Image (tube, rainbow, N blue to C red; front, side, top):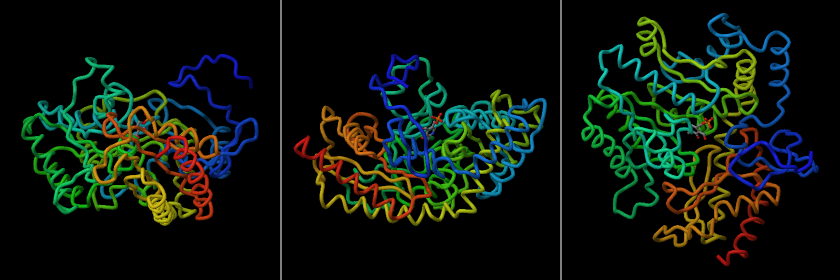
Length: 444
Ligand code: PLP
């Protein structure tokens, strides 16, 4: 196709080439140029592109039916995916509500929490505390939870302004505390916020267990996770894990929550759950939350396309691939390799100030000064410049200005979970070429 004016309106006026096809960790444009998908799109394509078993499952489903409205029919595909999902979730998380994306999964989690509270006679509970920075989606409800000003503030006053606490960015702290104590310090901020807001007004706390685009793969100290769970329990507040990016194996466990032995009350899934084959997400909760809602007449919520059989057949095949190919273990093992290689870059590039992540959700952050962690000047636009250079070199990556969109840049590396060590080396080769070009262009 030609580059004639397009009817699409995305953010950028700089059109990308037309996509031709995908194969494993690679994507090809229509000129035949090959790209390594170093960010799985936007942390979506967990099992790689054009997986033949997923495509076959979708084709088989297409030949039977592609849509049956959920109020008119049950489908084998949606029942089977719900059962499989429940099997893979930790603890008592075994009731599954399908949606078509991450924002929908988050909205559904919040509405589920609210309706549950009403069944418990707790109408006064409506506030959902979240973290700053954070990203929970772009629909107005999910955006209200999102701690990322450039995306959220233009839409004020259309949102209520949900309470926020700082994300545990301990790598920026210059106090004398141990990491353990820093984790507890950030968790206590939740307790203080609950008390300040009034515990009987607080419905839930939502967090990304490993940060995504907003914080660049931020992992809290281990002590944070358990203490947050305790604080939620102390006040009867529901703990929602937004695992839209981290779920479905990305961090080396099915849910990132499992790294810390946490069972959240509600989990939002998407991205790797449909793995780029179909728009798919889910909100998962235990029977103890869902049954009272069903007893009270049912969940006052639902999307037309939710649970459609084609999407669910793909989702089921994706989960089966994760299991049969051992991809979650591979994510853990290759994540170790990748983070080690990224740490190695710190010797060569003084402007890399921090390397972090879990499994195959990794990032590095640019700084002007490693001691103070002062960010690079905003005008340098380092994060998007490096993405552009890497793209020219055939490596697709993902980046954002972090720390709430004020300053500071991070760069995410999150390839499909099928990646091999040799392919990580391919990524590193292009990354080094790109960083060299970036360094000489900026004089850093
Ligand atoms: N939650 C998290 C943690 C995300 O990373 C995203 C997307 O990046 C969303 C929610 C929103 O998902 P979607 O873009 O599918 O609506």
